[in-house]
Image (cartoon, helix red, strand yellow):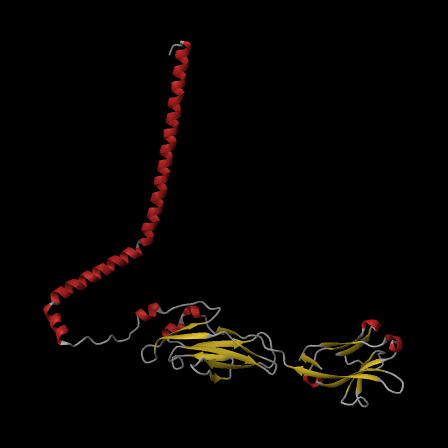
Length: 313
């Protein structure tokens, strides 16, 4: 039996007794019965070549049958035969043609996730595709606690506020009659549900990671109502002045820390340049001092020389 993919080819290598059948005609024929099969190609070249099938007799190296550009209707029963008086020598071959196996599907968004459209609740389409495979079928699944849920049969998954009501993982399956492959997991994190402002984040392999921190800080969600206990109400009326002062102090402190962190890079740069200039100044002073010491040493040597030889100044 030979199993090959559609559009591909196969090479069949046969051996035989070259002493007795080297000069006999060899052939490749198709049919369920050895007596009624149709010869497609032979080694003498008398039978019309099908262009996709050929047979070559290389003697001791073997008998080669090559069939290319395979189609589904090429599947069936074939025979390799050696022409012989009274009864040919024949071997039965079953050929099975299958789809090309699918490769692992890849996921990519229709628009770049760097634009962070999901932070504003906008829909995003994620596509699934395999680089190899014939007659590929795609299906999207969502991970559940006990079993995975089939969403739909399609190569695209539309994520929007109505679909992502909670955190979840999604994946795509590419399959055909030959094989099946599963994609990497796509994770969706819901930061704010649909009834509020619909903010969610998509994380998938090969895409940049992003967040919606600025969107969360500027969302228009209503704050929770103030407490209504008697104790809290009394404090509000009795300490209004103190609370106002504390609020102002907190505001000033927040502004101070904000300015401090904002100017951190400026002071860090200034510190680096200050250290550099200080080292440069120390280096200049060291060089000047060294030169002055050398001059003094030369003067002392001159004075000692004159004193030894009684030379006038």
